[in-house]
Length: 145
Image (cartoon, rainbow, N blue to C red; front, side):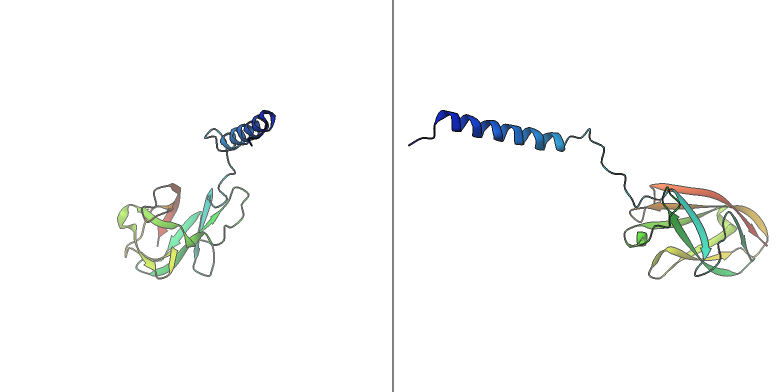
């Protein structure tokens, strides 16, 4: 025996409303919550030590381990960001200092200043992959003395 017409119409109506709500919830026009791990600022620090920014001073010919620390729009340090993101230091002029990644730390680099005094800048690039092409922070002034 078939269901009465009124039950079939009610079932169809319920399914149609549920489908419309589901499709509406998935609309591409909808703005979701802001990505909480996207940094808006960065500071540079000696690994485990003092802050270097905004005016980075390096000793000529010396190597120091420097780490980038990223912060959200409220100025809060973003923990565990290093697990799925990458950073790079870019000096200008390029020969102002060289960088070598610190093993196991995607935001830390051994920075070797050139042997002669000079000035320039450093920019910190950030991204979700090794291309680090999503954001740039800086430039910060650098003095090699």
